[in-house]
Image 1 (spheres, one colour):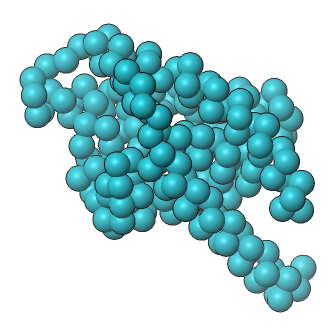
Image 2 (image 1 turned 120 degrees about the vertical axis):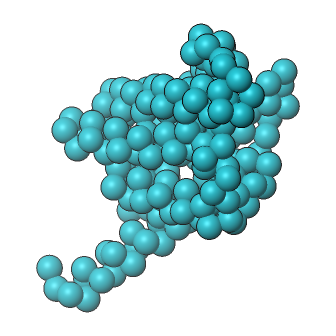
Amino acid sequence: MNTEKATHIRTIDLLYSAFFAVLIAVCAWISVPTLIPFTLQTFGIFTALCTLGGKRGTAAIVVYLALGALGLPVFSNFSGGLGQLIGTTGGYLLGFLFTGLIYWLITSIFGRKLWAEIIALIFGLAAVYAFGTLWYTVAYAGNSGSIGFGAALSTCVVPFIVPDLVKMALALAISKKLRKLLK
């Protein structure tokens, strides 16, 4: 591969990763009002991974988290900064990185077959839930007193399972079409 073509591929990778980092941010800003409101942030994560693949999708997540850490208002409710990452819900944000890495690992082993992508996203989401809830219980205890893992799960995970699975299905369907457009 010549240097000019390699540079072009790297430039395209950077552009796609940056574009999908912005998409994740926009999705984080969109809140669906329910009893416990939820954002479309995980939809953005799933779409980035399923469209770009593990490497570039994970790069988009890293860019998104870095922008938020720098203080840009890319997280939900137009928030940003290190305080968001180390706060009670910061574990869920940082957990998105696990989703990317798990997706990358599983699809590297099994290819980007639909069943492999579904398993990768489910395991990635489970990692977000586990890491985020553990982080939440520790951060909550430091700020407000002790909370049990079960109570944290019922507050921070259970209400979001069905919406996250719907977002996953939509991302899988949309990304299939986006991949064809990006070729």
